[in-house]
Amino acid sequence: MDQLGIALNDDRTVFAPGAEIQGTITWRCDANPKLLELSLFWYTAGKGTRDVGIVETRRFEEPGAYGSRDFACTLPEGPYSFSGKLISLLWALELTSSPGAEIVRREITVSPTGQEIVLGKV
Image 1 (spheres, one colour):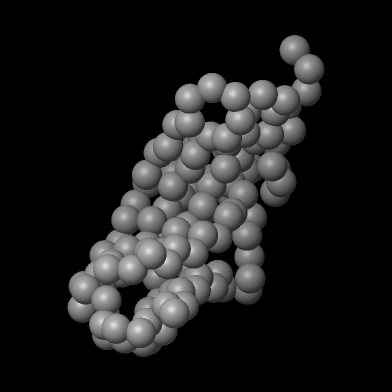
Image 2: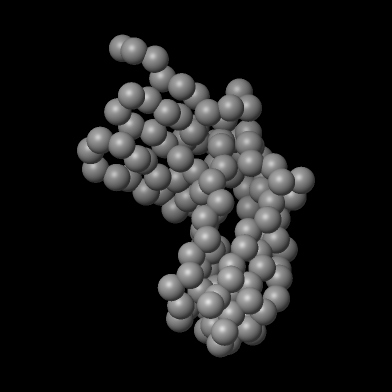
């Protein structure tokens, strides 16, 4: 069974807009994957149509059956992480291998206040 991991420096999960995210990806696969992909993206959850915005994708071709690589990526100025009664906007890093069905996701918060913005009643 393939094992994928995403570790963030200082185990940090809250970032200001425009901040740099640094970390390490790790993998141990039964067979040599042809490709590993690390994506930084946001998505909505809740009522209505799901929206997704991919900010950056890093491709690691022919990485070998196991290993680790450091990464760094810069967040855009928005959108901010928020949670409301009907919809939420979440940020994540996701690592996938191909071929393979293993996916690992690490959620993060992007906010100028240091925490997810909670929307009140309208």
